[in-house]
Length: 268
Ligand code: ADP
Image (cartoon, rainbow, N blue to C red):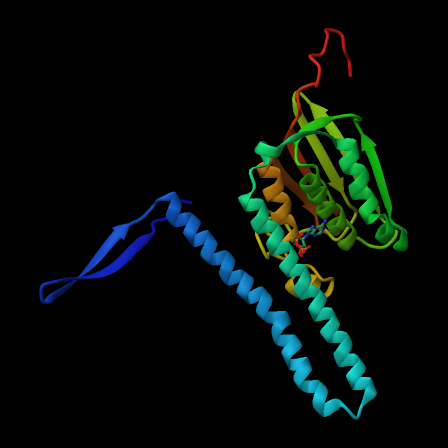
């Protein structure tokens, strides 16, 4: 785990040059490194669809006599443009998240509402593919936080579950709570994630199979957004999976204390 970062500089002492090696283990250094990686990744991710769009635009002109070709190129350009806007939107969401202090604007939120709106946002896709979104578990469990962001997080988990599962399968969405901890669990019967990739799925731009998820339009940002949202709410997220059987993602958040001091014997 431990690593050493060497800051290498050439300094001039009179007519001589000396090499200065300084060990830099500060948080600032690591932050800067993360930021550089992120920007390198973003540039790469943006260059791919932009490059495709330019190539297709160049290919359109010589193909102008062939309507089938023109239609095909135009359709591909549309697909790449959608991908580009999806990546851009998610990058903006992610950077906004990193700059937000959730606790400053936190409100008491009933998880039933989050679950209902996340399910609502996915039911058209689920219905079209004859998939069931089965909601269960505790009612009226509350957390402190930002409703839109928590909905976004759950929405990302549900849309992944849909994306990586076969038609007709079932997705479970459950709310549990125990001793001040709230759990939001999303379970699918999908393709699963290989054990060696599981720890990496929350990294930005990570995809289990680049080609496979590119076909299904993934950006590799969804789960890193979920992780940021959950961490900003003082919680954590874990994943379990079995290839060919399915995956389970569990968000854990601190439970909000009861609005009115609960009287003894109040069982709610
Ligand atoms: P993407 O936009 O590619 O879905 P995510 O960050 O949401 O990006 O997920 C990262 C990768 O983790 C995905 O590309 C996919 O390979 C894998 N993954 C995420 N959720 C699931 C799931 N429910 N079942 C199987 N694989 C998943």
